[in-house]
Amino acid sequence: MTRPRAAAASFVLVLLASAAVSLTTATAGSGREGKHGQRQQASVYMVMVKPPAQGVDCEAYQMGILAAALGSEARAKAALVYSYKAVVSGFAAKLTPAQAAALQKHPDVLQALPDVKYTLQTDSNHLN
Image 1 (cartoon, rainbow, N blue to C red):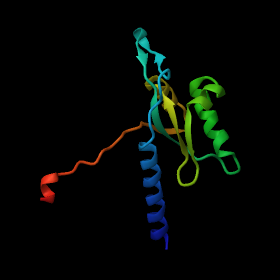
Image 2 (cartoon, rainbow, N blue to C red):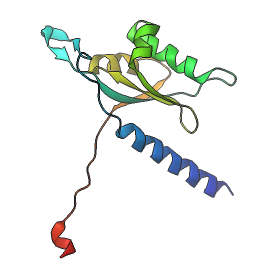
Image 3 (cartoon, rainbow, N blue to C red):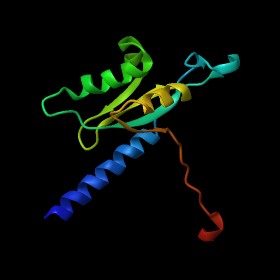
């Protein structure tokens, strides 16, 4: 009985990860000055966090983690793209590499992975 539930949970997790991968990156003006004056471009990161304690509001918990790394709740709200609550605890946010590194240092963050776009490669000769 647990195998079908585990398989369903894995399938939903893959769907969520696929949705995060398809998110587009930030528009102009989303960069920040990095070391040596060059602009760091913000892109979407999928951030996995430890689940909140029972009874704690999931979105407020995730917003607190993001605000701690970005310095304010206003910046966190502007950066947040999506909040995952059902199968996995985490969120997608527009971050610079420096912000993602700062977020990784938070004790409740498990991992922060950059958004990656995948394209299907086909072999047209195979069809002939």
